[in-house]
Image (cartoon, rainbow, N blue to C red; front, top):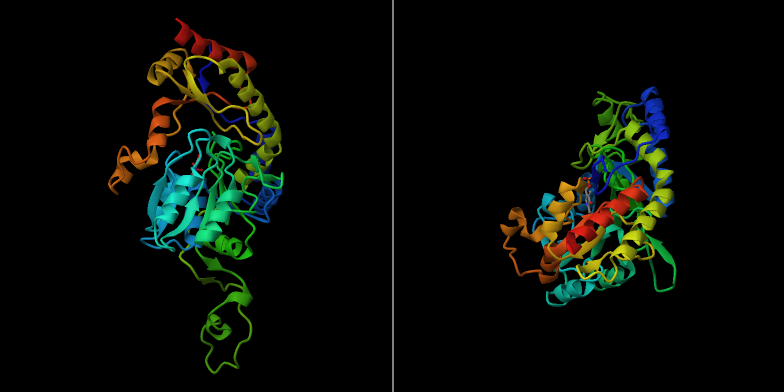
Length: 401
Ligand SMILES: *Cc1c(COP(=O)(O)O)cnc(C)c1O
C-alpha cells in the first residue's frame, strides 16, 4: 500500500473548487452574500432557527461564553475527553472549569457524575454545562436539559464531531445535534478533519433570538449598525450641531460599539467552500457509517479488543475508537505500515495547564482508564474499501503474530 492513511482527511471536489473560484471573482472577499447563504443552509441542515458563522470552532466557543456572560469565578462543568477548546472557552472569560468523568460505554460526559456535583454544592454554584458529542455520538440533551432546569444552568453543546448526528428522545423523535431544542447554544468546526471543511471555520446555532443577535454583534467588534438601537442621540451623531434644530435622523456613516467584541468573521470564499461541502454531508455520513460497520464486524469478539465505538443510530462517526491491549505497540506498528491512527484525547484535566488548578491523576478514573487504551482508526468518506481492509489486516496481524 503506497499512500499513507491518516485517521481523517478532507475531500475537496471540482465543484468545491469552482464554488471558491466563483466567489473570488465576485465583489466580496469577507462578509458577503455567501455567509448568509451558508448560515441558512446550515441551520436548515441541523434544524435550528438561527446560525452564526465564525472564523473557527474555538471562536464559536469563545463567543458563546461571552454571550452567556461567564464571569471570573463562575463554575462550568465539562468532560475531560475532548479537545481543550471545549474547556478553554470558560477560562477565556475567567471562569472555572470543573471536569466530570465520562460514561465508560459511550465515552460521553456522564450525567450521573454531573448530577453528583450539582447535588453536593449549594444551589447556584454552577452556571453551565458543556457536553460534547464526542466522536460523533450525540449526547442525550433531553436528560441534560431536565438537569439544567433543575439547577438553573445553561447548556453549550460542543457538536464539532457531530453535524448530522442525532439522539432519539423520550417520544421516539430524532433530535439532531445543534437543533437548539435543548441546548442554549451549539457549536461546530469546519477544520479539515471535521465533516465539513472550509480550511478554518465555525458555526454557532441557537433557537434564542436574543442570543443570536448578541452573537452577530460580538462577531464584529460589538458594533451595532441600526438606527433603532443607538444609545447616543442623532444630534451627537451629526457632530453636536450647534443650535441644532435637533437632528432627528442618524447620518449614514454612523455606528456604535456596544460590547467588547472581536473580529471572528468567516470569509465569503470559506463560506462558499463550506456550503458546497454541506451538499455532500449526508453522503459523507453514510460512508462513515459503512466504514464503522465494517470495523465493528471485523473486531467483535477479538481477544485484544476491550471496547469499540460500535454501531449506533445517529452516530456521526467523526472518529472510530477502539480500546485495545498494548495500544502503544499497535500505534507504532501501524505507523511503520503508513497507517496514522490518533489518540482522542489526552485527558484535558491532566494537561499541565489544568494541573495548575489542582487537577491530578485519580480525579477522573474512567477518563484516565479510557485514555490508556483508546486509539482512533482511519475513518473518512474517501477511505477506500481496500485501504480499510489493509488497516484491519494490519491490526489483526499485530496481535496474531
Ligand atoms: C475541532 C474541535 C474544536 C475546535 O474547533 P477549531 O475550528 O479547530 O477551533 C472544539 N471542540 C471539539 C470537540 C473539536 O473537535
